Length: 141
Image 1 (cartoon, one colour):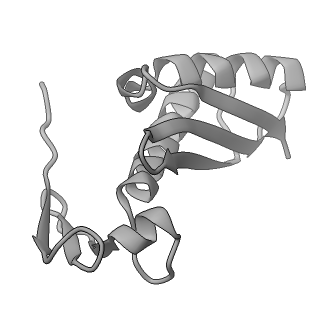
Image 2 (cartoon, rainbow, N blue to C red; image 1 turned 60 degrees about the vertical axis):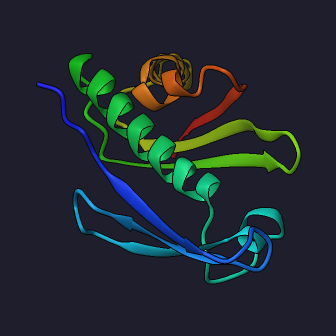
């Protein structure tokens, strides 16, 4: 069964001096202030679409990798994934870099890297980002 998730952004003002609020409607879990300055300059205490995309990518990848590992009999004790999404003004999103570190007993670095590559290729957010380069660094803790 398909699940549709919704988020809403309310924006006031022009692009450069305006501001908005993005709300996670489906879960009602959070509300985020957004501005152009956060997107183009990295100002504190506000987010941007790329940070939210990074959150989606890191969560999706982590779930995919946990599923792949568990199906192969290697349940992770712990795993941390960071997704660094790069925005170039005038061009757009130009890449996503995944950095994953995990503690998984009985697994070699080579095996872990292969499982991580599989998750990178097959998580739904990676597939949605097919138009940009996605790179990965995977290491066992």
